[in-house]
Structure formats: C-alpha cells, structure tokens
Amino acid sequence: MEKPLAEVGGNSSRRIAITLLSPHNHAQEVQVTNNLLLAFLEEEYTVDSCDKYFDRLSDKFAPADISFAWEGTDSRYTLLLAENNTFSHAKQYTVTTNMLFLNGLKGNTTYYWKVWGNGTTSDVYTFTTAATPRTVSIEGVTNSRDMGGWKTADGGWIKQGVLFRTALLDGITPRGIAYCLKELQIKTELDLRRPDEGSAGTCFLGKTVQYINISSPHYGVNDGNIFLKSNHAPLREILHIFAEEANYPILFHCAGGRDRTGTIAFLLQALCGMREEDICREYDLSFFSANGETTPSEMHNRFFLSLITGMKAYSTGTWQQNVVQYCLDIGITESELKAIRKNLIEFC
Image 1 (cartoon, rainbow, N blue to C red):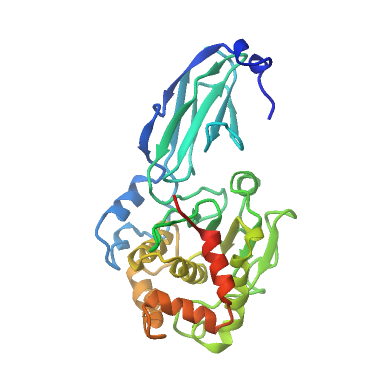
Image 2 (image 1 turned 135 degrees about the vertical axis):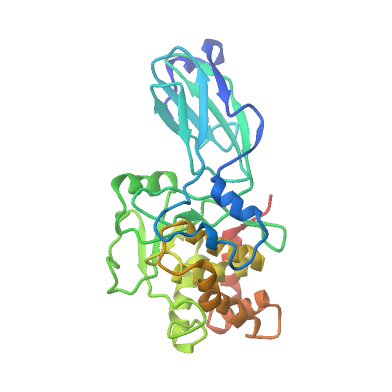
C-alpha cells in the first residue's frame, strides 16, 4: 500500500492536522440496516408479519448509509477503513470533500478508520456496528444480501462476507461487477436456474470468477419437491460446492432470488443450527425487493413451510437433526457436512 509523503521516514514526520468527527470514537451500535427492515426484525414474528411491507414493485432493502466526517483544509483525502488496528487489508476511498457516505458494512463488527490529506493525517478512530443483518447494494441486481450475522444453536454466528444471495445478475452494471469483485471479492457464482432460462450459462462477473450452473429443485411441494428422489442428484451437487473452502466467497442466485435460492439457503441455515423463526425472517427479507405478485404469508403457507413441515416428518429427530439425516441420505458425507459448518460458522 502506498504511503503519503508525510509518513515516509517514520512517525516523527507525521503532522496530525485532520480532526475526525463521525462516527464518534468508540461509538457502539452504529446501524448498517435501514429503519424499515429494523422495524420488521424487531416486531413479534408471525407468518404474515412481512405482508404490510410488501408492495410488489419497489426495492426497500438498501443498507443504511454511515456518514464519515472530518475537519481539515486539504484539497484531497483518502479514508482508510479496516477491521484491525494495523490496517492490514484496509479499504481506501479517495474524495475531495470532508465527508464520505459508505454502506454495506458488516454487522456486529469493530472497524478502525483514519484519514490522510495532502501531507497530513488524522488520529485513528474506532466504532462497532450493530448486530443486525447486512444487505448490500449491487448496481443492477435486486434482492441482494449477506447471509451472515445470524446466531446458531451452538453459540456461534453465520460468518459474514462468505455467502451472498441475490436475484439474477443479467442486468448487472460495470459498477455492480466491480463491487462484487473488489468489495465482496466473489470467487464463485452459483446459478440455480435451468440451462435454458434467461441468460443462464453466462458469467457476468468475468473470467476471474468460477461460474457453476446447476438447475435446483425447490420447496417441498409440486414437481420441484426436494423430497423426490429424482431431485436428489442436483441438490447433492449443489451442497458439494459449499463444502469446498476454496470456493468462497460464494454468490448464489436463481431468477428472483427467493424460491430456489431460498431452498438452498434453508438447507444451509438448518445445517448451521439457525432457529426456525430466524430462518423464516431471513426468507422474508426477499420481500423487501420487487418480488412477484404473491404476499409473504401466502408464500409461507403454500410453499416455504413445506420445507419445515417436511423435515419435521422426515425422521425421528428434531427437524434440524432431520435435515442432517436428509443430507446424508441424498449422498452428502459426514466430512462434507462438517466442512460446510466450518466454512459458514464462526465463534467470537
């Protein structure tokens, strides 16, 4: 990383002439999630909780902006933001004003930041974000979010920054592609659409990203029923991908990012031990994007709950234990299940 001239030769040459203003030093609960999603997440949950937020036409999932502000007299500034006080792997943002708005930061994470000017620098400030879900804005893509940040039954958390779910990427812009590659650092795109559906078979993220297209079954009803033996093979292929650490970060999607994507998300979340209510809430976050004609409660009652009720009836354990048994029965090995959990769960 190139250093400004003021830092060449050691700390003795540094002139601290930039005063950081916000986020305040040691600020807690800095919000990354917008107020509408927060209202939904904080209220008592029922299968129709999300209906009042759903209008079919508009995206409402955009992350909250965090305002970075400072005082100084330089004509150009570089803000460095990192998850450690050594600023290794820091992200840099260059501006010509004394303010910068950033969004898409991780939840429940401590950040460190400082600002360089034309030969001057600031002190280092730190702040911690609130433990709420992380949505991300990918230009040209709807229904996009990080699947991390949710608690697991064994006291862990789903890792952030490793698993992203979205709708199709067919309309992604160059800026959206750059965000996926530079900010999210996507290594694998898993497209769950049929090979003859839309632009399936095309990797819009470029040659540096591994592109995999596997037509996925979905829910527990109709021809797409994941409990039908004829649908086990593609699910086995799909779950193999999540067992390979080298594939991460993974972005996976179908067309709308709700049904087939939601089914794969459900299996991964259940394997990680997320609570039933949290899995349902996470599914409902898809309805904060422009998403078809059917209300969330209708989708629950007709389709999504078939996954949970189907797993509850599948074997003699808890429904989450039955998910494990289901995966074993379709050909996933114990070592692969262990690898999936290792890749997706962290302990603070």
